[in-house]
Length: 338
Ligand code: NAI
Ligand code: MN
Image 1: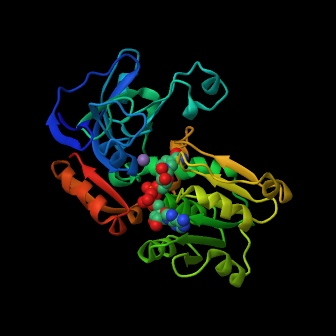
Image 2: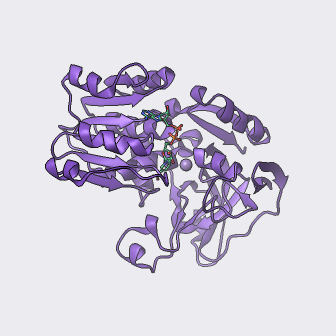
Image 3: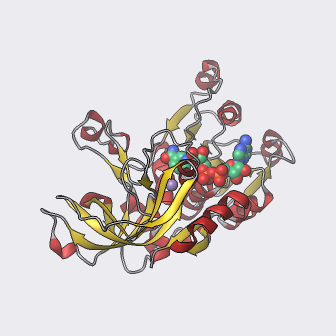
């Protein structure tokens, strides 16, 4: 089978590998489309803390089940599925208390185990989530990035009355913006970025006010608009943002953090307690695939606007080059394994 194999930093190639057989409890997925994530670029550059080489990468993908392992219902063969990359042990404290996405023994598909940039990928049957006919193959490959937004917003909760502020209109910010607008119907949705073309997408996806912080301070723009955010999501993920968010948040505000920077943020406790703010962290997704698939089936979000490019699997180097050289032109870039 064709596989995108990263053998070490900056050593990536499309190679032939033997087709894997599903282990007991697993299914084999014939991959149709797979999305390229910023973390795939980090793995490619050897900047990912957890990856072990050589690795078939890819954790955002969908296709159909073409074989099942021992103990798995054979009638699943042929079922179209989106694959969640979260493989958890089921027995640790996190798993037993309903938080398998932060399993003590977490294995992420495409990071700790072979991923979906290949014709076939084997995963535990629980990771292969069925798709209805009205969610097409390209949309299906974007369930994973939208599940990042679903998890973050599931953590913070979203109230009808919320004025929301989203930092960053990159791919992850866009999933949050689409969910806040399409699913939650927020009337006040402010998006800040420094790149005008990304702010154009944000408006197209439901932002009611966009602020280019390269042009004017965000605090000034919010003051002029008379807005004070109740819900702030940091999808730009610079450690300095938390400090600013504490100042901008309304009393009783909730702040969702998505970044993995090792750099500290400077957070005086008085700023949290004076307004009784709440901070939420979010990692991957906690069984959010059915919810996101339902959003798609109901037409609440627009995955077709989220996908900006698609390349044949053979053009994987061109796809990575585009993302590296012209990130401003890209939102989600798909690989087609048809
Ligand atoms: P990206 O780099 O494409 O987008 C980030 C956007 O933020 C860019 O448009 C950039 O111009 C903007 N930005 C940067 N600094 C800013 C600032 N100070 N103020 C306003 N805008 C600013 O990245 P992508 O793919 O959208 O991912 C965003 C982050 O989400 C990454 O840091 C990634 O690690 C994190 N992430 C977290 C996950 C989780 O489960 N918690 C899962 C996936 C991604
Ligand atoms: Mn991803």
